[in-house]
Every structure is written in C-alpha cells, then in structure tokens.
Length: 487
Image (cartoon, rainbow, N blue to C red; front, side):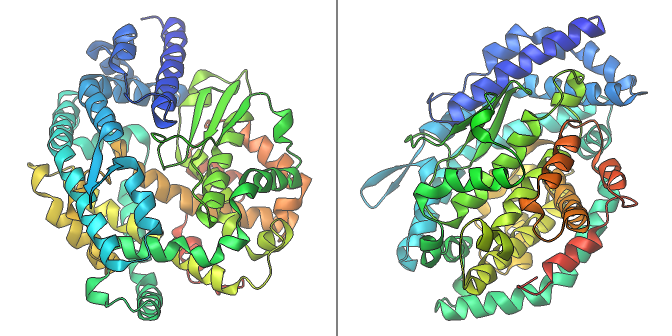
C-alpha cells in the first residue's frame, strides 16, 4: 500500500477503534466489538505490509509506523480473543454473599469495605472470577509470543523493546536500584500503617492497602461535587479554560457498566478528545481526573497539521509523563492550599506519598516479572512467580490469579516507569523556570502547550534533553520518593 494511502487509512482505523473502546469503557455498550473494525482495515495489518515497515526503520516516522503496523498485525491476529476477554469482563459478575456484583465494580467495593474479613472474602471471590477469565488470556499471550517469532524477532521481549524503543537493558537495572534504595523506607511506613490499622503483617493483602489508601477520613477535603470544578481551577491557573475547548469532552456520568478505571479517549487528535471518569468519592477521584487531564490537554493541544505519526504514535512515555505531572499535584501541599483551600494536610500527604511509593515499587517489581513471563515456554504456570515477586517487593499477599489480568501488551509497564522518571525531571524544570507554584503560572501553561504541540514526536530521552538533562535518569525519581513529606 502506498504510504499516503496507508497513513490515511491508519488514522481512520485508530479513530474507529478508539471510539469502540470508549463506548465499551464508558459503559455505553456491554460488548466490545473490534473484530469488524479490524476486518474493515485488514489491509493495514497484512503480514507483508508489517514485515516491510519493520524492515524499513531509517527515519523517525518510519520507526513509529513500523511499531504501529507490527502492533496492529499482532492485535489483528488476537482480535477475537481480545474481544471475548473485553466482553467477558464487562458482563462478568462476582457472586458474593447473595449479591451479583458487576466484575468491574468489585474493586470499588473492596476499596470502600471497612470490615477486613468481608474485604478479604470479596477479594477472594473476585480473584476466583478473574481465574475463570485466565485460560483465554493464556491462549492469547501464547499466540502473541508465537507471532513475535513469526515476525523474525528472538522473542516477545525483543520485539517490544526494539519497536517501542523502551531501552529495557538500562531500565531494568534502574528499577532494581529503586527497589533496593527505597525498601527500608517502604517497610518502615508499611509496618506503621498496618499496626495502626490492627492488621497483622502476615495477613495483609493488596485490598487492605487499597482500603487504607482510599483515605475516607480525608473525604471532606475532596468533595465529590468539586471534582470537575477543581480541575477547571487548576487548568485556569495555567491559562487553560476547559469551557473554551470544544475539542474536549468531560464524561463524568455514573453508569453501571462504566469502567472504574479512568481513561482518556483521543478519538481524533486534536479535534475530539474525551476524558472519562467514574467518580466514587475521595482523593482518588481528584488524582484520576488530573491524570487523565494530563493526557487530554496533551492531545487537545497537538498541532492539527502535525503528521499522523506524531499525533497518534511515538513514545507513549511522553503522554504518560504529562499525566503523572498533573496527578502529582494531588500530592503537592502548595496545590492543596491554593486550589483546594486545604490546611493541616500532613496526614493526608503521608498517606498519598506512601501510596505513590507502593505504586512505584509495584511497577518496579512488575518489570522483571514480565521479562520472565514473556520468555517463558509456558506462561500458564506463572501465577506463583507473580505472587512471589510482587509479594517480596510489597510484603503483601498478592492474588496470583491476577498474573495476567495485571498485564498490558507491549511492556506498557515500562512506558509507565520511563514516564515516572521523565515526570520528575519535567517537574523540576518547571519549578526552576516558574517557581514552586508553577501550576498557577500562565508561563508554565505556555511552556507546556509548546511541548504538548509536538504530540509524541520526541522520545522520552529526547524530551529530557530538550528540557536540560542528558537523558532519562532514575536517580532523581529515587530522591523524590525518599524526600520529606513537606517538600
């Protein structure tokens, strides 16, 4: 297919696919129907087309198109399994104590269940439902590994690393250092939190930390009705008026089938960007809407005349870094005072800084687990390895049934980790240029708009260099995780 025609059809495909994921994730459809979309655009992902683009990666655009074609080819081969899994998750229920709970709603109930025995029981029943979905996930993953070899790569790891530009050989040891350097601090705070909640350390689960991290005692600081206004106040400080952005839609309606996981759906970049959240109350709502606003504002400010490869493709660590920059405001004492009018926030900050440390350690431990999983001859046996690896890093009971549910394609966990490293560097650059209250400086908004306009033309390493660093360096992230609460 001629390149111009290929790009035109690729954009039509991405628009249709994103719309379908939006409809399902927003709870507007109870089935995920992507097979027909792949069939309509099957020419994009023919083996010969993908192979030709993989072989021709001489330029930046061609590298991005190669990743798009290869990932599309792989997903096209897996489309029916993906559709079955998505539909099954939407329609699944957790049978618990006489109630039929929508599977996607169970995590919300776990986070809000104060009775530890009931919480653990619901976790176990949810894990049992997850286990029922795992055979399909195993089959899908096994086939993905086979396809990587069919495309000429040594394995799935090499395919992901070389096409997505993840630099796993340097990222993995950086995460080992993060886990080592932050372990003592993490365990000290974990023991204190479990002791205060009268939870025996040997019995603590991820659900316990989710409940403790929910921080219901701080709900008065984060009223449910103020979620969107707080976002608007934040963006106004940067000179951004959401009501003057016709290309941005905020979907905050509560629907039974709506995914509890907030997301951004850039249907057409930059003309139609949608931010989706299912408010449940508390600080998590604010962090979630700020996170997705980072994505949404990024995509909404991309130059309309930028090439397709830079508007939709490229290094996703870039857009994740913008998202982390914004959700990090919910851990910023100055933002809490200026935007939320909150005082006496030390206890809240202690909670969310620890939750952030836990999250970073979880992802730091996921990377070596995924490296092993994607090189394993039989991934169905890795539930124990998942439980042990993350259990050691977090010193919690990890539900082994989640070993594939807690897995994104193409090492997206590495994108998150790279983004967290870049976010700290970007935040430091903003503070250097505009001061500690950068989030209330129009100049900072102009600075962000300038780099947002590039889309994802640059890699994370290149953006780090553009703002004054030699490249990605995890040492600044580690220092940030160990910094005093008031900083």
